[in-house]
Amino acid sequence: MNWISLESAEQLDGIKQQQGYSIIFKHSIRCSISLMAKRRFEMDRDNLPDNLPLYFLDIINRRELSNQIAQDFQVHHQSPQLLLIKDGECILDQSHSSISLEEALAELS
Image (tube, rainbow, N blue to C red; front, side, top):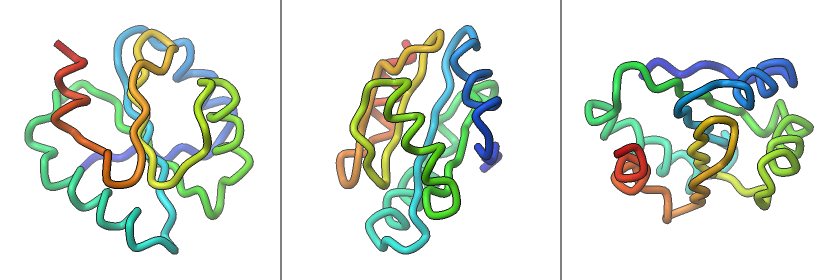
């Protein structure tokens, strides 16, 4: 899976300016639920469009950026969490066992 490591506020600003779709996956390396959600998501990677940017946020090392995401996209901070962004707006917010690539893909059509 070609994750783009989300490490700066400038990258987040770029996501907010992008046209089209992107995904932000917030992950905690200390959480077994987060690890399971990430594995499930990655198992379905063949169903993802090739041109869909996939951003990966390590919330342990980038907590301030995670808080900024919550504020900018008006979602509660959670981990694991998947945000589907379209034209700079969050159109789908999933967390924990509710993370579903199938549901996210349905939003793309």
